[in-house]
Length: 512
Ligand code: KIV
Ligand code: ZN
Image 1: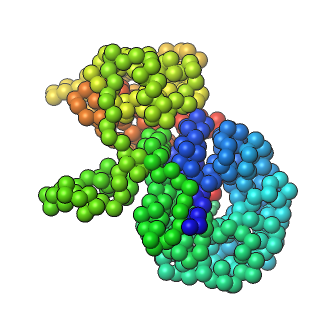
Image 2: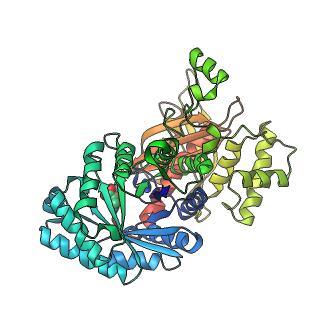
């Protein structure tokens, strides 16, 4: 059975989801999990876009072995040089060059004629080949490009040395039959197509990213570009877990395998969701909370009699484990470290931070009887801050209740160790709290979204707060966890503000 290559772009296209910014430690943690998952290619970032992206690609290239590490570049020498520098430490480096080919992009965005596009693309590939052997080319907006011109572009870049040709449905416009036909057309008409891997990259604007990717596989594509949980620009990309589980569950129809260790899917999904702050919709295929929940009596009866009546995938095949016994205040360092290992988090922290994590675990265990996996994940993820935040919460006091003017007083510690404090009133406790933080940080945030949820069951559960904040037109997400949801609310808001400050300190760049 032949194999479909899985190209993961969670760290590049996925990170382009509005409001998502991952720091280097977080990106490394995701890259380690992708390697455990067995993806063939990790697209680690777009090095010219910012110093942060460059450093993340470099760290991933240096640490992650056995997997192709890829960096994105426009068809410009500067972009390609930066990608090559970031990939220096990689065992298997790939440069991914993209250039738009559709009429709408040529005319309005690039203002270039077809001949110029052909020249630029060929030059970029030859230039990239001067640095690495493995060069991928994407004709951006391929699905809206005139097929004869697309054929010409693809032939030209293969002659120039491209080793993978990726056909993006950049704006999620394609429908399955038509997209499959485009792949068949390229396989039939491009004279040198057999020299390359033919790949697809589908966006989900019409909810068809996975369907289009699978149709393309049926038509002969052998690499699929996708992201964990389907995150990505606008409505997202094809979801890795859906593509992989469709190929696996319906191998009678597709006759393909992948190298994915499917038991790592849930770990990958949870990690990406926690670190990006993008929650997985409850009824999402494969990894949603309801994906294996049967509520109707008829279904439950069927499942009890024979699981296959209503279940096409075994939950354990994607790594859904039976709940492990919770830890408690009598659990020692060994049990704690063992659990981190089982959760794949043992390499997430330095020795020093592991000690801090253990101390925090003990403090939490004093407050709450049972410590579940989600509690432990929350402790570790909170400690994965890469650089000291500019503002840290020292203390807060909230007054609220019926017939009371909600008032918040907040004390923050700044990076240079100054303590600042202020108080103000608001329409409710969160309004008062966030207004006070705005006064203290001098960063006027507009709260676009606010969610609080218990991460485990029980009244003593940790509360997780996710916020989406807009500051001067920039969208940021923040997340924090605490037994006290007001404290978590303050920390989540500060987390977003600290990210903004961190982001403005990076070198200016351009995302795709
Ligand atoms: O969607 C797209 O066209 C892209 C390219 C850079 C491959 O992400
Ligand atoms: Zn894309």
